Length: 202
Image (cartoon, rainbow, N blue to C red; front, top):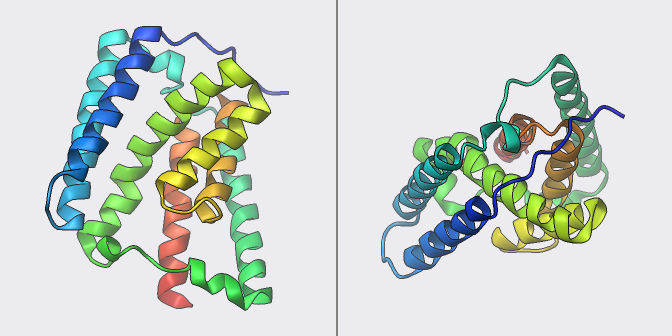
């Protein structure tokens, strides 16, 4: 099986990252702003603070923030193709799944689309795969960590049984296999792009 060795993440980095995200999310819940403006501000703050922690603790390589290899790219393209095909087949066969093809209210305009396609995937993958998954993996093992991190990811998006649960399982599995954080980030971007495209076309 194709794998790189994991490098341990410093406990200080994990603790500080968890505190940063929890503080930002709680603080944002007390601010009365337009949903899009609030999410942009929240994700920008989280991305800056998390990036500063990555630099401070020098964990880019340990997180897998490195150039993808040819095998990483192969996995990305195969997974993208399979998910696209499976998604189209499921939507064609089960019309009830169309209820999942709704964009959040903030994602109707250009700024919301950019948030969904660029900023959110980077911040969410760094947190949910780079930190939460790694922490759960050390505690519960690979398979439990994949499922639990996917459940946390889906719950954060508002519903446990949702496309985000499936996405979380795929993203964590891809991260486990490649040990490269760019692959789940790109898969996340591709998944959001597919949802936006199907919402417009269906």
